[in-house]
Amino acid sequence: MLSPYTVLDLTGGHGDLASMLLGDMGATVIKVEPPGGSAGRGEPPFLDGAPEPERSLSFFAFNRNKQGITLDLETEAGQNAMKGLVEKADFLFESGQPATLDSLGLGFDVLEEINPKIIHVAISAYGQDGPYADYAASDLTIAAMGGPMSLQGVPERAPVRISVPQVWLHAGSEAATAALIAHALMLRTGEAQSVDVSAQTAMISTMLQGISAHAIQGRDYQRAGSLLQLGQANLPVVFDCSDGYIVLIPSGPTLVVIVPWFVEDGVVPESWLGDEEWPTYHVRLLQGQPVSHSAEEVLTAITKYVANYTKQHLLERGLREGVALAPVNDMRDLSGFQQLQERDYWLPAPLPNGTEARAPGLVARLSETPMSVRSWAPALGEHNSQVLNALLGMSDEEINLATGGKAG
Image (cartoon, rainbow, N blue to C red; front, side):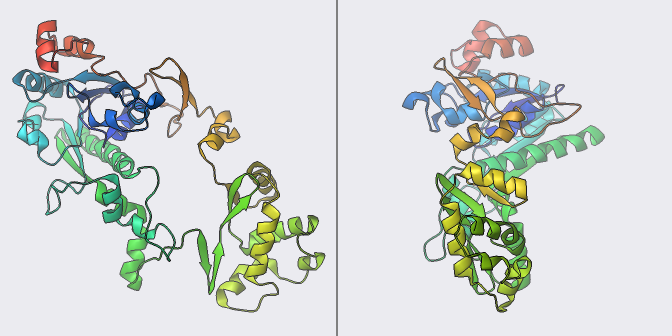
């Protein structure tokens, strides 16, 4: 799909996903790191708990399908090598503070002069300009500044963060999409383009319905935790089962199916089958109309029933009988999930310590131009000689000068 194209990835852990997606689509991706390695190599968790550049599982996760080189962009030799690569590239991704490349003499005006068709993508916390452009930021602060954190947690307590960092993944996905759009236009016009991706606005885009609601209604959505508000009732949607949790919305169509389950197990009397109009239960609850069994009674029945069964049992019965319920899967559950296994989603990935892991596969299946994983994350400077000699014709001595002394 993208096999004719070359991507230069100068991101430091905040944009790795963007270039990886293009690599999965077939592009040649060259990961350009400083001699000591990118900041992404310092991101936990670490293989065997050892905080070393080659053992960051975070770096490993988002840098497949990339060749790895080092360049010392503080030196003339490193900058000249970078300019040589730009001449042969189609995309360049960066994620430093605004104007970082400009300070090195490698700003977009220079890149465009070298390569009039280059697509330059700058990923930053708040964008390349504006009063907050130079502010320090983290996943936590951008999640807060972007808005989604305001909706996470329960109303009685302060907002909470998502346990696993998400901000830069949203920004990376937006950056990959924007890069391909800019490139499609370049194919028509022949003109280079610089793409400015703000992680803050990427997070805002995850809650557009909330922004619209505020604009129309003049008020915010409120944190509800694991509750769903129906009229005056706040209904839980997460329930304890025998080996974890399931999610289930106690709406009329669901109750039509599961109330007989309760009767089968003796959780409720058989009279429940006939003394309530279950298909419209949630509508009447929402409108404050009379119901034969209160929301509390229904929730108690659900709680008692699901506590006796495993997540898998409940999922399978729900699938058979058309009930929209699902297990709350953890990583162990996902690794053994039948749907993913039978679609060959998981891929064997060799780890630096000689063991093998099951790694997440590709984001989409394309019938005519399939995505693929051709290599896993490179070691620091692994492809210095291969890339710089083959593409630029540099000698070992020139490579050592440009890379900080590692021919690779």
